[in-house]
Length: 299
Image 1: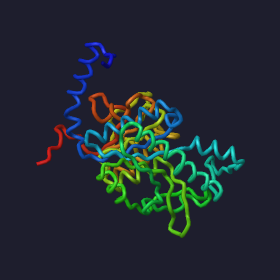
Image 2 (image 1 turned 135 degrees about the vertical axis):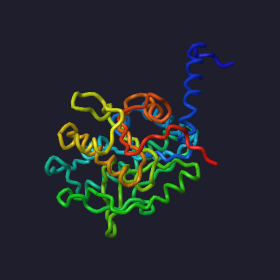
Image 3 (image 1 turned 120 degrees about the horizontal axis):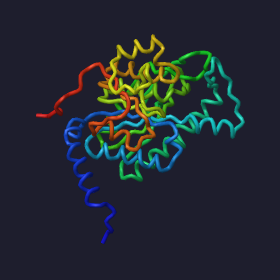
Image 4 (image 1 turned 30 degrees about the horizontal axis):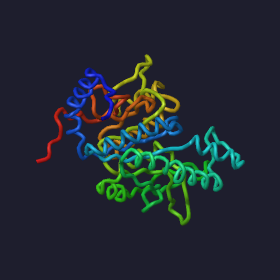
């Protein structure tokens, strides 16, 4: 007989939380949720396993998660091991042919398959692909001086629909093809996730970061923000530094049809579940439309 590890009060609390999640489970049934995964959690086995369980749970209750990942620290580590020195222009790494080969090897190989394996270990079904597969993401050079750093100009997301409609969780490495033959581009993970969310007309884009969210002038995290507020805060310098590309990605995704984008701290346990299935939420949600008060009911 399995030994009980929960107290009666703990069990009651768990049951109450599950009951209170019902409207959110109904609301997100059939919804497409793109999740950008990266940061320190990718190098921690326990954090990776927790993330994978959350993604599998989302799929189990009828959500269609699409995972897009980064892998910067792993790329840097491999470049050092191979003795490939990087050049920088205006503080940004130049991605030459040697570097982009390492990027593809690490992102499409090591990192991508590690996430796939974690999802499979949690009881889900997952397939790892890159932006090259089925011409999912076609890019042009974002800045010629930076070499093979890509900006998506054409998206072909049917392969993602085919996978999640078949019960499979797509895990996408942000490596893309170019307009010319045999071109490979490295794409910023947030940028790739935003482009995919926009092309899928996703219900949600969750950008997992290492910070709690977007802060106002007093340093407080804002839980609800409109695109107009984002633009004003950027002009005033309230949004600055590394938060600018994330909010720009959010605005791009919303302009292309994503219902809402949330920037949230991936270090918080079960961050995705908090955001989707509780009143508490997590991080800063950016949206131009009012949230539904009642769950969507299919008739």
